[in-house]
Each structure stands twice: as C-alpha cells, then as structure tokens.
Amino acid sequence: MKVWPLLAIALLFFTPGPSFSKSPAAEKQRSRLRSLHADEIKNPKLTLLELAYFDASKMLSNKNRCSNFFGGEKANPILEELVITLREQTIPDARIGIRMSGTFNLAKSSDGVLYRLFDKAEINSLGAFYRAKMFPSEPLVPNMGSFAPNTRQARVMILLHERAHLIKGEDGTWLIPDDGHSADLSRRNTGTIESVCGEQIRGL
Image (cartoon, rainbow, N blue to C red):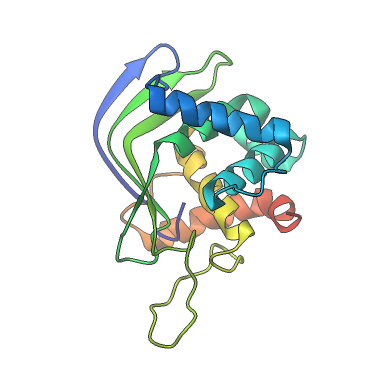
C-alpha cells in the first residue's frame, strides 16, 4: 500500500492454480517467512518487512472483522507471495509506499481464492514503510490512514492495502479498486482497510 499505490496493468494471464515462484531464491525466502511463525518472532534479526509480514499474517489468522474481509487464513499464502516479490526501490514520491506494475497472472488458489500477482512489486525506500519526516528540510511523508509513517502499524497497513488489490471478493471485484492514478481514491481505499482492520492494527 501507500498513500498513493501505482498499478500499471499491461497484460493479463490466467492460470488455473497458484503461480507462485519456485526459484531457489523464492523458495529460500518462503521457508524463511514460514519459520517466523514457528519461532514466534523471537529472532532479533527480523527485517522491518518480515516483522510487518508476521504481524499481518498473525492478525489475519485469528477470527475477527479484518480477517473476514480478507477471506481468513486461507488467503495468507498470497500475502506471503507478495512479500517474496517485493524489491526495495528508491521512488522520489514519498506518497508511494509500494508500487505494483507490469503484467500479472490471475489464478485461483487451492482454497478457491481468486488472486493476481504482478511481475513487479517495489517497496519505496523513501516512503512511509521506512521513513518519516524528521527535519524541516526533509519532504513530508504522509500518514497511512491514522497511523504515523515509519511505525509498525503503518507498515502493516501498507501490506494490507496492497494485499487487498490482489484478491477478488465474493462479488467478483477486487477487494479495493485500482487507485494508481488517483491519490484521493488511494486514501479512500486506505480508509476502507482501516475501517475493518483498524482495531487489530492499533492493538499491535
């Protein structure tokens, strides 16, 4: 997510099953993410992205309004794959937290969840996931909803926002609409996520 997510969709492909990457690097990262649950984040060397992933997946594994919105624990593998595809990138616009672009695969998981994964998913090193305005000379980094930038809560909000772009709901539409060319729509989408997940995020 972001305050301003950028989704540039060029081509669409459909595959009947999960299109998760099976490269050695992806498999190594996937194994690492799954080990976090077993370790219950006792590992002091977690990256900020790994901590945000753990917080979001743990929160959605419980029964609550937020989990219901996203389809519960069965959609967690899609969050896992989003994190695996993310690459840090310097994007001058601090309003962007994550930018997904390029072609995407549309698929259905073994649990029946319709989802898409983009070829390119970039996490902004200058956005709210990692930065907050500290000095007058620095650019403003907007809040993520009501959550201050560069906080545990903001990072979870960013991941949940992006995840909502990837999953189709029961009505056949994405959980939140594409908002890459509209900062106002992006803010409304963030508001939607906070309205259903704010209580759980504040409880982190």
